[in-house]
Amino acid sequence: MAAKMAKLVAVPCALACTSISVYAATEEGSKTHPIKPNQLPIYCAPPLKSKYIEEQPGRLQMGFSTLRKAASRYVKWTMDAYVFVKNGIMDSVQFGKDTYVYLKNPPPEFLPKVGVITISGLSGIVLARKGMGVFFPCFRYHLVDCIPHL
Image (cartoon, rainbow, N blue to C red; front, side, top):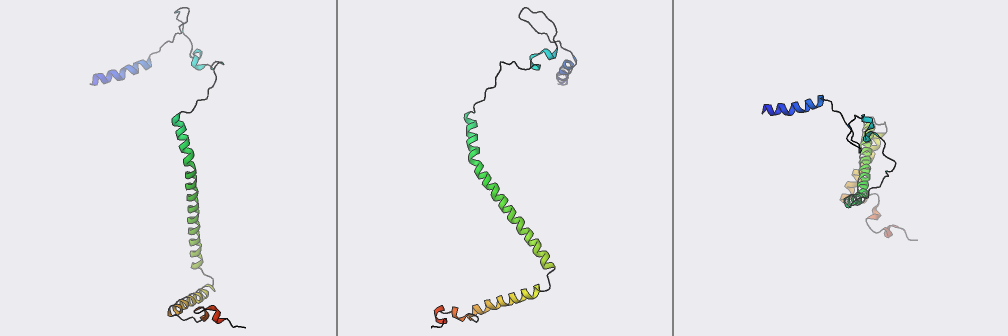
């Protein structure tokens, strides 16, 4: 087994170290003379007779193209929705941070205003549950009965 491995490794190494001469065969005969690599046709410019022909797309390419065009509007819609939601979330987070900073250091007239609004709202809820219309008693009945007739 080791001998086979040694042969497999030795042969490519030996070939890499050897130099090989390249000879060009002519139509006249088999005169052997070495040529330089820059004389080989792969290193030369292509002949002027060649022209570029546009490849026609096949059925598979046409199918992928149709699928891509059909899906592109949905992908764009999804990307727009993502940007819209992302911007909304970022705005909400920034609003929360700004509110936290504002409530951390409130101005002096802020707390009395909040107290008045909270007390009046809670008293309105309590009075509404009891069925007492203190501020606008005419809304409990018909509005027409509260308007004086001329």
